[in-house]
Image (cartoon, rainbow, N blue to C red):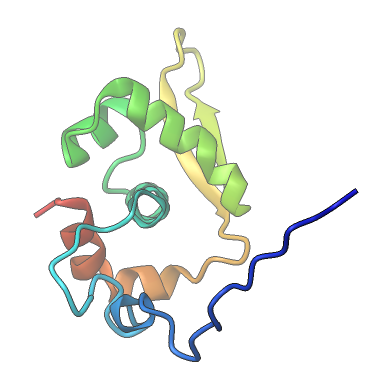
Length: 131
């Protein structure tokens, strides 16, 4: 067996993407006008939805749709994805009501700092395009 080995260029101490990363103080900041990554927008969307629920601003799917402009399916998928961040979000059925009448409630934020979200809400909304 004969193998051919290729020598790769050395890894730079300062990768090309390092100067474009966001800071903790300004989550939407970048040194260029690049659009935010799908990962960042997905993460921020989940944080924002959890914040809307916890603050009482939007506690059901129609209210989330009105507050964000999300299609129903996106709002439902985002609610389901909160568990991936260890955010414990539960639906509380209204007594005597049918057809999923009720509201969502955040029981536990898990590793997420709710105060960080509140302090960075304008930047989070800017990344998501919500004004």
